[in-house]
Image 1 (cartoon, rainbow, N blue to C red):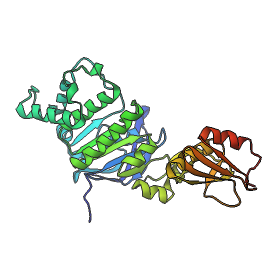
Image 2 (cartoon, rainbow, N blue to C red):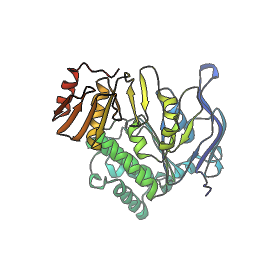
Image 3 (cartoon, rainbow, N blue to C red):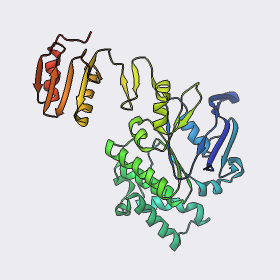
Length: 339
C-alpha cells in the first residue's frame, strides 16, 4: 500500500551562511520521507548536521537548495502561524522557564489558537489537561518548572507540543540530559504518541542502542555520504551500520547491535542458557576474546545457568565455576589461546 508522507524532501541541501554571505553546505541530495504514525530516529556522529536538518525541516533555518513539502504543500508557502499549527518543535537547549508552572508552560502550546490576547477558553484548558495526562505530567501541573527533574521537564515540553495539536513533532536530542531510565521512558512515550495519535515524530539522538529498539525508521547521516534510511533491522542486516559507524578501533557488532572496540581474533566457544550466554559473552569481549559457537578446536564454555559455568579446554580438561568473575580469573590462568 502506497503511503503519503507528511514531510517529503527532494534534492535538499542544508547548511548555513557565514560572514560575507559564504555558503557552507553541511549535507546535500537529501530525499527523505516522514510518515504519520511512525517514530523516526536521526542518527549520526557530531558534526554530521542533525540539528541543521531538523531546524531546516521546521522552517527555523533556510534551506540551501532543493525542496521541502509539508502536508503536500511547499514549506515556504506556510506563514509562521500556520506552521505553528502543523509542526511542534523541541530543541536541544534546556528550557529556561523555571519561574512558571507546568500548567502555564503547557498552555503556551495553545498560543497559535488563542489570538492576540492569548486568552484561554474552556476547550483550551481541556486540551492542556489532556496533553499533560498523555505524557504523565498532570500530577505536577501546579509545580514550578524549576522544581522538576530533567525527565519531568522533558515531559512538560512534549506536553506543550501536544497542546499545539500538530500532526508533526520534531525533537533535537530530547534525551540528551536524561538518565538511563528517563531516556527509555521518553523514547517509549514518543513511540506510543506516534502510534496512538498518528503523529509523524522525528527525533535526533546519539543513543544507538535505544534507537534500534524503539524507532520505526532510522535516518543514518554522515558527512560526505548519502543518507541511508530504513527499518533498523534492515539497516543492520544490510551492513549499513558497519559502513556508517565503523572506524579505527571501533566496530559495529551485528549480532548485538552495539558499537564495540575491535575484538582481537581469539575465539572461545560459548553456548547454553541464552541470558547467561549473553552476559558471559559481554565479559569475554571486554577481556579480549571473541565469543563464537562451540567448536572442537576451541576452548568452550557451557552456560548451564548463572551459577554453573563449565569450561572445557581443547585437551579435555574440565573446570566448573559459579560466577562470571570466577570464570574470568580461571581463564586468565590458562595457556590455551585457540591457535
